[in-house]
Length: 459
Image (cartoon, rainbow, N blue to C red):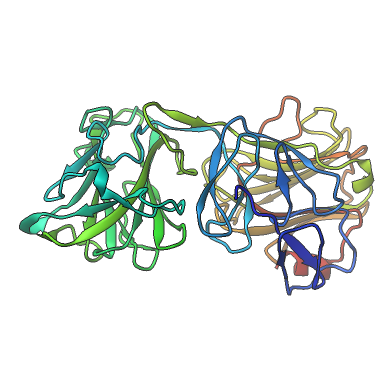
């Protein structure tokens, strides 16, 4: 099923109009919110529906299909224009918003295609009959069994990702490429990515424990090593390799090898050991994004946008709170904003804004009138982890709360007028600073909550 719908409870009572219920035990503020979006929000083509009120929805766009992990622990495909509630890394789900990315690795799940894949060192040649196990999608005979041949000890056994018939993959100057694959434990506890034959500061080995889903020893020359649980024993592994601005050798090999233990390069080719593999991806970018299947050509997943939720009835110019439980896809030097605006298209005035900033580990926030801006800066935020953030304002003060603490207060803030829309971008026309990340919850309050309530809300 493309998208599962769940509804959150309020003080332990389930909401109606869902296919399930998620209960939360933490205390809510005594004042009710006026606008709420959560993973419990139902989604349909072209919109993310509000939990409250039920008719004030985000307009959503994505002119392509996209994959996500469903609540049933299966890799699924959302139709063009359909938002995604993704369950990678959590059991309650999050709204997943991603930039445009292209999988430039063709025949991503035809591992027997030697133009793009190549067996390495005592791995038996692959044939279509080796596509014989259930994949992360739950489809039978859709993933691959690799078997070793008899070859003795001290062997690196695995698969090379090729570039249209070439053993070498080229990474242009000053550019990053992220390499990923799905694997499942059979005989081996570890898989590692071997980046070799590049210049020395690009080379490295990064190990992944596919027995317990943790990182092993990873190369400091590479970045954003990640292992993600896709259910039913499947893990998705990813590593980013970056070429310097003036490289001396930016072409080399990308090899995935099996291993028995962390930081151990070689295995014995015994003729009986196996491993399970599915779906490779190479994308230009500083971090990995959701899987894009390819056959004979590159395939692009189009960027997602969500904006225009609410009306003036859901917002209060003179006091209120904007709350978000969010994480960035990566701390990648880009601006990602959630804003309440007056819909005039001005990026700076009559706006309430939370921003995961371009500067690493920075959170910015601001509240502005038609002439002046009250700004906030918090420098200790891990943008990639789940964060609970609240920006409160009224005529006497404005406060920024992060993960249970008041991190900054400004007296006599400049207050906006004419607030009418909630957006996952900067609110400008045309928009920018789109929020790309994971959204577990967004709330708007028309009343400035107490400090105790804000601590509770963000803890």
